[in-house]
Image 1 (cartoon, one colour):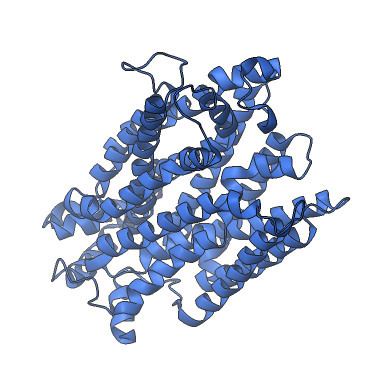
Image 2 (cartoon, rainbow, N blue to C red):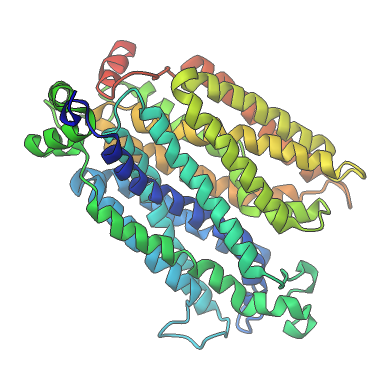
Length: 489
């Protein structure tokens, strides 16, 4: 059999690897704050024209998520009108601008190293710009991969996008760790007393370290923006704009010439009406996509990923940054479990088993956090909680969002689902610290067990939701989604 008849795996892998760079940047951008937030906090607490409170710090730490909501909301419009490829090029440029702007927010307008309220607003604008890039990439990268991948390996290839997200987080944990080097993070109790009150090893972190952490993202961002120019547009988008000949050539390169003709006809059959109303296939179709996104965030995972060094420090661990790196290695290892089992076991079994594992880990943290002699058990429970997410809700949610909607509403439906994901990411991330620090009486640990107990209950509800409402999509083509939802109306 000729290469033309069976398609080129090398071609498919090369374009998927470029697309998953967007996932890597997604993970990099959202996790970079974990190493930079304490230095950033101490820097702005030196401001003379305003008081940098915990509320301002919580907003600044989460401001990129506002951009994520905007970017994901725009993703459907851009993906439909500009195409998947051009939208990803825009995302790459936004990542690059944000990285350089966050590193040097004083550029052109402010005195370097002098914190002011105007500088804080400018810094947050740059973070929001990066967030818009994340929002676009989070919706369009899995959509792109899902639309170029053959149905028998689509779940595995889309799962690689989640692997790239976690790998991006691991990379930035290492980058932050090495940037910090022999320097240390400033102690919270010493912040606001002036640089002279800080340990000399922390002064560099406050003045320079956080800048290097944000600026380091410019390297992968520039690479992504360049490489994405060389990948093809997706065949399904090309058919939607009447470029069937180009779509068939790309399909032939991926699937082989004989199979390409059949796939092209299937796409055209579901593209007779290029756009349909969002609720054409019923409210449940959209609701399932939204709730997959809501549960992925409501289980609380990003509160752990964004504040990992601070959490491990509160547990009394000697080297929280090193433990954060170790958690990143565990996370990426368990993401590989999903990559290599999603086509064998299916989507629903992984989601349900992951939900139960997360519930066990979260409740373990709730019962042991703050108790003398139980620090290692708390850390182990946190790792169980995180690892269970990584082989289930982390990758599988993106797989389902990329494949569960019919072709004619996919752009808009994915945009809505991902927008809800970022809205709840913002809610969880911004509420974690005040909820975790709640006290019913002085010195009690009410906030500790309540927070993780709540996450544990939500994990159980997530398992029930998947069991009752989410259809299994293993082995189905994207065109099969039209029949599936028409039958369930």
